[in-house]
Image (tube, rainbow, N blue to C red):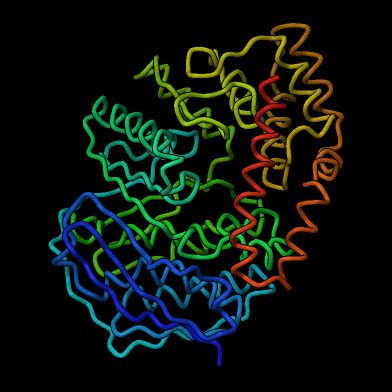
Length: 435
């Protein structure tokens, strides 16, 4: 029987560490690292049932993909009940998930000292900034996590420092507290092997399409318990009417909970352009110099040339703001560059991006252009087949062949080769983009 066993859960000061043992058929999905997470508050007094949540939040989706059961000594009963609802949502969303059962020797519930505090997962992008704007009266602690888009390796130290500095500056300027969490959740998992097996079933990657709602919120459990945090907000990526297979949705995030804390998927009632509108209203009323950070390529500012930077800049213009004032160098000449990049397939697009450009297109149809270049772009966007643009931007065949071959390759070999291969490919992409 396929199984994952949480062998040891320990807290030492601000460090959480867990050992995991699996049946032979699941070993390929895990590396030889223990699971580790570092907080900036002591967690020694957090109950073991809460301490088990971060690792369970990472391994349970892997178990469900393989019909495996998970065993743990102790788990918070509120989290265990919510986890069943998360499993039902993800299994309904993804046909390849089979499900499985969580077995605990003991389920517990130890009430924390409730402080009424709230938290918000925060990067400074459109979604999390909109969530701050909408929930600013609650004065949420801004929580930033290292381990997904910023890896825990030394190669990403500068990116993590840049994010910490930026979030700290934002918090200081708004009278807020910060919380920083560092984890090896994607190097503890053999993420390349998960991609090799399951990328063919999803529009994004494993963590974005399956794991990140439960995973990121679950990482916060010991810190939230230690702080007495009652509400934990995570900003929506998508919105009502979009039925994408995505790891963070209301039917996932709103079921994640543990004793003393409820998680809330925020601003799902607004499209991305409407979130930019909310930010624009806030800028005009309270903070004219607000800076956003959405770049796919940099953490110390916006490159102004990637798809996400351009998309955000156009959105800011449509909301009546000058993108250059808020972190995005942009002028009318950039409209032709955006069109060329989309038509030539320079950016790999998914259904995610298609819906966001559709959202922008809906607004351009209601907006009077301010220049001939803008008018030409609006006219082109109104007539272009976005599905065709997505299809023409598929990852190269070499990517797909590598993943297909990996399914029959020893895990130790593939996990060693994949990072070097992707680093080389990433370097080539950066050289082309610099030119």
